[in-house]
Length: 578
Image (cartoon, rainbow, N blue to C red; front, side, top):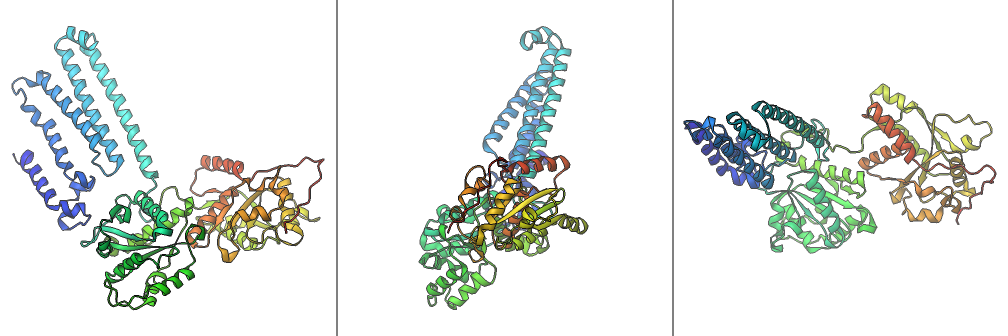
């Protein structure tokens, strides 16, 4: 009686006691001690462990009370067990109680195997009792044929199960979710006792609504189980904004043009100051998308955050306090919406949220190495010597080439890194392509073109002439587009006005190749340099021999289109647009 009755009742009582804390993600001592009962299940189906335990008890012991005298020689037990297993499998597939899909697939596979085993037992039992009925109903001439069929079916099911487990394991490892770099495990998303959300995100509807929705939805995918307060999801009463801010552990503020002019945004800021919530500033730098520079945003803050003793924070010290909390205490995270760069912005937001969680407040060493996402842009390296050609007239390209050369040795040991950097040679393009005494080019050669506000505007059109000469010699063109306005960054459309027409037309079509954006923030710049190296033919450092060869072939095909002009046709001198 103790095991089949009291143990399930004890587990049920424990789950009833801790259900509110678990659903609110506030793990107390009792809930922590009982994690084995609920940690794998969705909070909506917190009691699934008790249901599953009841199924196991029925199939393992209670079913024996059916036809106690001669039940082992009858079919009723097997039929009932088959029906129970099939019904449980259907409920399992519909309810989906597990947090991780891999657990759900494994549970469904196990229950399918169990149901098939009971059905197979029914077939063997039927053939054992009456061979004529076995042949008529099942199709086997004897018990031996039925047994051989069951053995083959069992082996096939086991093989299929192993394949499913292997596939789901590989998929889980490659799933793009945030992991701790130190251990490779998903982070623990624990809430403090007084909060129901991991973060509250504040934004201006006019200029930041689309971006914040993207931030929240992507974070929910990268951090399964994270709870972020977003107005379209959680706002019920605008008069309770201050309570909602205090109900979150951290305060995410998305800075865009006009943010500080919004009265409700300022209410949220004062509430975050009053409840002493850690600020996680994110700012949109693209003016075309509603962004503004940090200097403009600080000026806007100083002009508008001037309320005296707001209700949510009576001891408010004026705009200087607000600027210090938002702009100076931590560096604002630049929001970039482009592929791998967006992932870096999201990783930075996730890391700061984790740093402010109660679980990692006492375990900072686990976050010392940061976070990672499987499939992110990692270190790359060249397989052999590479020559990078740069043009003196292309302003800023020399400094960029040195950064690219340094990045080529990233991710390797000190000796291998030094060898990788030595294998990259930077040469003057004019001397290499047109110099009378130039040494012949050998190995893999790439022409590095730095796109900024001065590209193709040099005196004499030397840059355009050398680009054309490089493409005539089938040298790959690796283009890098500067994004920082103070460093000469301009919209890409400007280059169609600056570039000589001959390079825009057949057979050159220079911009058929995608230029790599170069962002100023350190995390984004690291990704930019890795992508530049990849466009030059570098492959991931952790790739195996076959993968390295395959990716190297793909890079050579995908690198800038290589052309050869007919020998009889004289070269057309590029005309620089005024």
